[in-house]
Length: 528
Image 1 (cartoon, rainbow, N blue to C red):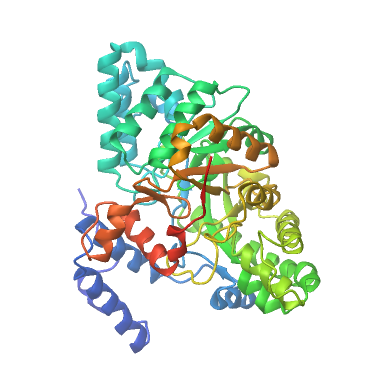
Image 2: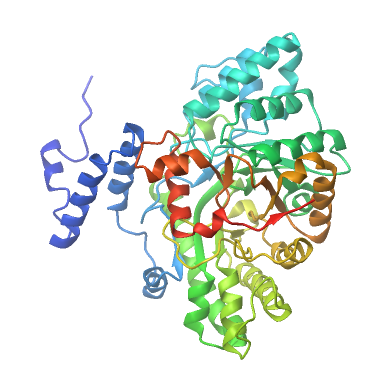
């Protein structure tokens, strides 16, 4: 058999930085050395960081000078994907098909009982087709309910406990995400019990519908949220209107089609865009945003096409070949953040020095107009690659990254500056209207809430009725902190400050966000 050779001869890897300027080459080598010697990273984290550096050396897919200028200025941002992202950012495989049919590639037979079902899922997570960890691990109660009575109840609970423990230990990240609901099930109840007992940082969402979700099951979820800051309470009826039944929540709170995914997330810094536009909000809405929107769509299409046509990700891919993923269900995110700062910029520049989003009716109305306008612009700029959302980018409210300074995640009121509870809800709700790709509001309660979960559930019902799409409930006394969309443990924040290695890869990211934005630890605490 003829041996395969490396595309680049081994000895030429020494000259990997040859095409870079001397300054860039020196920075690249220093970054590699710094990563190798970073004592706060374990082996897997170093490996992933080094792989990311190699991918970052690739050139960008083709784009116009105007689009490149917007990226260079920071008005548009590609997060940490690198110039030429060669795989989708997120994917949502159809695990039910895998359990029912098995997998030829993974050499798995159809699952016959709960032990086989959980073993098959853990195997599939190991081979997740994008990112280093599985950002979506299934609508777990639906997946496991058919198998839950294959074992005696006490043994079934032990199997679920071992499964949930392994999910956390093998996939140590707050971006790993499972969905429950809207219906109650034995598997759903057990999973909530196990999660509360083990207190992992694996993210959870309850797709909540008061017409379908039994109140007692919802109250169980409220009790969990007040102790471990999950699950999210997702407005399932609102999501059904946009997506139909075939949607999932992954990673932080990101919506996408089942059997689909997201190619890329290109985000708009609304604060920088507002400052670039000047002091006139009408010019911003009528001229600046439409101009940015044109190049925003160009970048999203270019990056998506690179995955499809250059990296050819959908070819020779067993996830596609065996029917777990379909190209026509993929889309891409057009994300926004710093809405609060954009609204404040214009309100304060026009003679209202104290006007603040959350507190001033004019600033609140302008914020809602901005999100409405962004929606209109995204609808007016077709992106053929985004077949999963009708050939348009999917509107998303992005939660922020470590390097963000003086900006508020997504469309939220800044932490620590929230008005009273109902005004907070009524401020953010109008901005959620068009953001079908994922958005959330965070509420934190004091210890009185634990004794009155029914009152908290009433608040959730009221928030959803007002238009909030997704609600994160937490307690000021919990060990878990909702950074922006994912969770970290307070103990991990302390360990990071002491420069200790952390098992959870998302913990270092969360610690960095908290260091740059310490107000996230000082949200207004609500009484019930």
